[in-house]
Image (cartoon, rainbow, N blue to C red; front, side):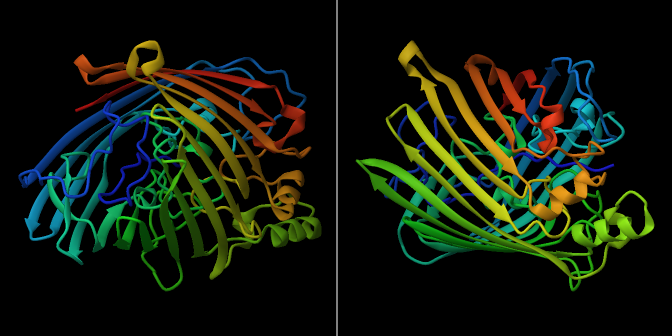
Length: 454
């Protein structure tokens, strides 16, 4: 079985985004140009653990398929534990190593909702804890000027001076979302919104194996005002599968993104424009449906997969500081939807909008309150495939009365700084799960998240 989720770790020097309400309690940016640089450290060592217990209400639906959200099920618990080890090698170079343990299960095996409700779950058959390598990559930075700013010791980040203008090369195993589609307010399901289509652009079918990681390289050009990134990475051998395809000539993914910072009414904002192109042995939805009509059988993408099929798309991502305590974010994304989803989740169009606030107004400055809405949609070819009884790897009810999948999420993060922890109750409302108005529910999903990090 397959699935998709990954922790998001912001790389050093991400073009000075707006001060995130989810970040450190201080309300000034963590890294100010011309600061006296902190004494360089050769090692960085951090740890995180996240547990999420999640439940949904009982449903009454006229029919269900193999990949439908279950009408009735018990609460599901998931957890991840990650060790973040960084080591400085030589001038401008460091290696990062992240062993990770994950276990538990998502609701209905992480199926039945395209914008799935727990970004820390994987679609893996065995819920027993598993140890695996999440990241192992080399980062080399080349200064393009004399000015520096101070990096603090953080997840996959070494303390010390960093040039304000530089080129960086990253090679190895990582999550593509570590470098692209960053957002201060909505990017990390361990501390922010849980929903898959809020942690990343929903229609960005980014290269990743079952657990959300890939192998490849990312080149960065970063200045104080803007950044340009390009990555080329491996694709999984099968749709959302656990193994990566090392036949690079026939299976690969390219991603490019431009990040620009600005000020509006004296408040900082950031906008990001992303484009991607994936190449793999995908199936055409139209071909799968045509073959099923000819044979009289249920359509299947596995029966018509062929090499060198592509998927292309784009995403726009913006964040804006409204006040010292409140930030606004939005994303829109699109892919052509002609060929099957291969890595992330079955969304061909997505739009999201949300607000995040600190708890300073009620004397809880370290707390965070977030609220967001998402609309997810499918291409005509994808709709026809599901309506004919086809299955993807996330959704499939055996039939389809199409409607936009609509999701709302609210969370409140209660900071426990004495214990390096936070407890977050979370609520999600899902209308038309898996785009099916016949199974509209609505679905009420309640969760409690415990996150520890030091």
